[in-house]
Amino acid sequence: MNGNSNPTLPLAFDLAWMAATVVWLLLVGVAWVSILRTSHRRRGAAFWWCLLVLLMPFTGALIWFVARPRNSDTDQRTSS
Image (cartoon, rainbow, N blue to C red; front, top):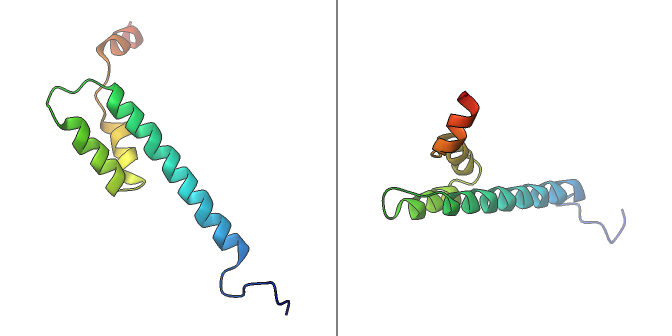
């Protein structure tokens, strides 16, 4: 066995965690930008959405992308 290798943490496992972290950070960043660019009817709604996205790593962002308010201009253009 080589003295430079770490038998407790294989490289593939380390790379998988690093890739998952990068994907999570990108997903949270894109969700936060989307949340902050959306006009909310109630004060504080953007704060709670950002907190949900942060606390529920993948599912919070996916919930936002499914449940976010739609722009009425976009809906009218697609339905015509």
